[in-house]
Length: 186
Image (cartoon, rainbow, N blue to C red; front, side):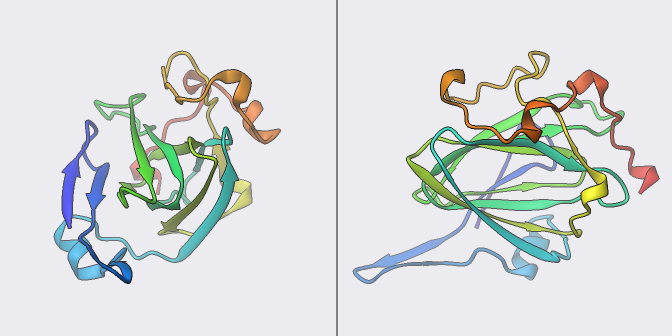
């Protein structure tokens, strides 16, 4: 597995080894020892999967302490623009984001440590998105940030007239209005 450091320390882009032949392909998406050696030491508790069509924009979501989550995300089929926003108080990259294209073709994965809001926009006709979480989902601690906050400056690579949003994702506060994540409060 190739580990690529992004512009934000701790957010890692992972390129697994893909073994292919006339039958298809095989790849390892999770191996505790390999990932631990790469600096990812999580006890993942839950796997999730979603299917969405072109223009669907999900996010930016996170959970408040003590239910913050580290995530390992990937696309099984299709393509998305995946975005991680640093919401860690005192971090030199607080308010900055990483945006990468994940697809069934490139088989890349993105690791987001705790302290990041997450979202994605579907770039293909449809996409199947999968992710692992290291903490359980707690609806009472679910939070969000406005995906179109001009202070974040995220280019979602989908024209605004093509966005498909849940009602919830149209009402999140701006980044400047959220309570930043403080590790000591965990």
